[in-house]
Length: 310
Image 1 (cartoon, one colour):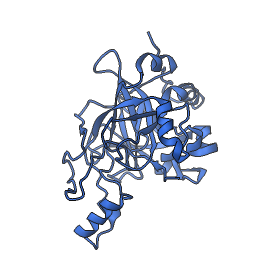
Image 2 (cartoon, helix red, strand yellow):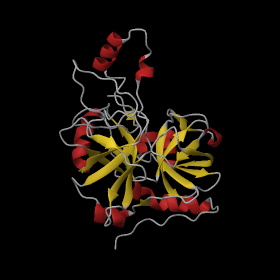
Image 3 (cartoon, one colour):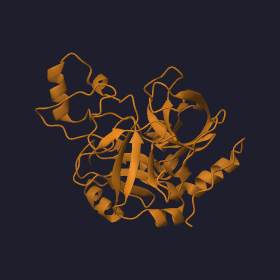
Image 4 (tube, rainbow, N blue to C red):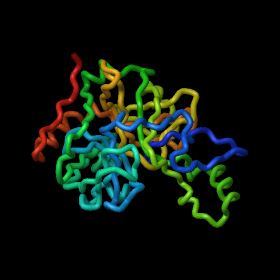
């Protein structure tokens, strides 16, 4: 079985063996991706390990002034022991900037992981979690979450969707790339060359039919649950990789400036491999759980209403 990657959102362009270029920060090196304008995705957040951390480890979205939606595997300290939750005091949420070094950070108060992920990890198709903040984000710009009706109205095979993040630009498991980097600097730690862009990037990909996605991953004995969405860029090596699991997959609604979240970045097979779809937790499958969890952990904020079809 091929190794499953717990993804962190990045868009990786194809690299030729003779022309590898290491991107500097702020350099637009992500093929089929582009720098996200300040203010376009105000609901996007980054998770950090401390107030001093400037790199971060995962993405997320603001669905309520005091609640963040992210991936379950982002907040489980050991993926082989699903019950081993990351302590809330070791998670900080950064918001308010596309520059990951300039976000405003708020400490987490509580972390709630979907029970299906706690029971079966990725095999259960429940790779979502909620983070309650110690205090609400002032004047928070939230993202609507889709329920089944909204998804049915908005999401069809091949429809364009948008994914955002600060992830790495190459796969350290790619032997060809590692060999080239080793020639450039034999003494360097390969992991330190994993470049995380300083600024937020966006990329358009397209929803893939679930059965078609299953046909891709089935031979590798990797299951695609009904609670997951597959998406990719046709005939392209754009893909997800390390650095921004938990980030949002969104679709434009009736207003060009209005987005609805339909997915959470979850997993995939290797980085930047043409023909390999990205797999996202399907938000509509968890909209009731999200609302119930927020209500049962009632605080200053009210649970967000899932978007419903008109």
